[in-house]
Each structure stands twice: as C-alpha cells, then as structure tokens.
Image 1 (tube, rainbow, N blue to C red):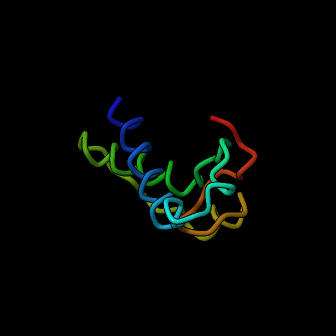
Image 2 (cartoon, rainbow, N blue to C red):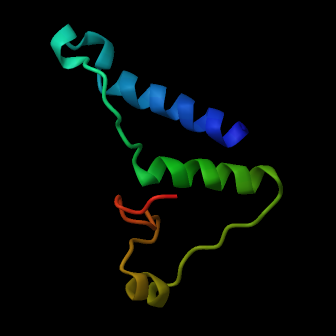
Image 3 (cartoon, rainbow, N blue to C red):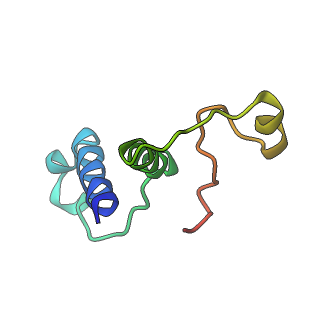
Length: 81
C-alpha cells in the first residue's frame, strides 16, 4: 500500500505543477491520465532503498541493448504493469 499511496501523492504533485486547479472548468473534464513511467520507477527505487535493497546502474552495453537511457524510463509508455 505504501507504493500505491506514494504514486497518488506524486500524481497530486504532478497535477499541481501542471496548474490543474487554475484551469477553466471546461478543461477539468473527467479523464484518465497515465502517470509517466519515470514516476513509477522513482517509487520503486525508493521502496527498494527503504527495505535495504541495492540498485545498480545499467552498463552502457545494457543501455544500448535495450535502447534506454541510463536513468530510464526503462519501459515504454505502452507497457502495462
């Protein structure tokens, strides 16, 4: 649950930074917005560190092989967990 709660807080921060509250009512229609994978990976990273786990960095060879940047995101936006 802590990961889920953390994602909710990050989503609220993202909405705040996007100025959602200041948008006209017409722009506040109900919709589903998928959080960027970068936020999911940030939460996962914090959780791993929180229980004493260790994260390693990808080597240049690994980055090239899976076509990602060193700091991610490591899954495309179309990837569904």
